[in-house]
Image 1 (tube, one colour):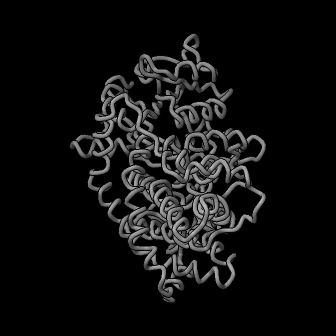
Image 2 (cartoon, rainbow, N blue to C red):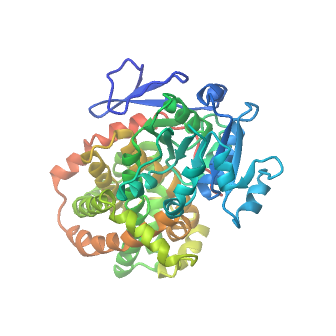
Image 3 (cartoon, rainbow, N blue to C red):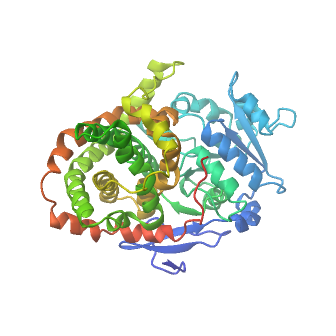
Length: 497
């Protein structure tokens, strides 16, 4: 239910001098959110008051998507969007192909663009940013705003006893989806108003008092239909843990382990693929996106529900224990250090592909045969996946994350951004083509999830389900929190053809 902003304030409440914000009911109270949409683009000059030039540093998936979305949203406002790339960058050709030019100063050296911009969006890879952020800090204009789309740099700075430079606003807008999703849904939004990827925002430093509206303007300009507040630290904790758990690492370990289980039970390889990977990326993801987690169980018959319940009860505890371990290692800096160390080892070398695993040889055949068989969810696979997703939401709730962040980082990003791409191309393709930080995390933790499923969860699923645990799932507060967020969802699914 969406209520006026006079509802009781929450820890992540905020006010805006430019946009009309709302509050939504979540378990235990309310949270403030901003509803986006192209009808808000006219307010962007006010939100970006004092900003004449936005410098987007980097041309990876997020850099490309955000530069293009910002340029399109700000057309005719007099606010210039420029792209800054490091010397010798292979991305120059692609940036030029998308209309950024050295001749009109919308494309240039990364430090030159940073030095000439009022809002500097640091969208280069995490490890590169950790290594070279000081070069950017040294050339910033007095009072220029530092913008981030990930809290990794904060964790890196804190680990070394350092901080962002004084006198500069520091804000973050963090889309809850991969860069390709950010651009694709924005383009689709030209036909379906408001289509886009939800974002969180954070204000880490606000010396001029305008950081909230600046961040909200950035999110609206990206096309975010729903923006909620967090902190930079809370964002990187939930984001990095989520990548290693249900968004990527866990789903990879899950489908590999289930594929092997179904082969052992006697399935042929194609059937095993359908029951494992295809179930998660297809019917389970679509049902959660449109109807919520509870509907996955409700769509099963009595026999299927019993299988689902046994798989759910056997999986929830071990999955949550592993997610808690990941959270601890992210919180104490271990996981961030592992990314930096891995980047030093790899240098310019590419990581090897994980697609050599036997199951991925059958993906093309399964995708080619879609429509020939009923698109039904395997109840055992569904129970394992839903238990893992619920375990992550509970761990985030126990660690104090706001509900908007919990449902976006644990559910919405998975079913509305990542899983559709996995359905189109397969999970292994996603693991091999995501950001290096996420890729490293999935490679580190995916095998851990696979071992937990095979060695602990699957054997335990032979016993009867725990009625108290299944009742706790049916009455879980996650369902109402997700329903509140779903009311803000655009009426369009991402096109990944």
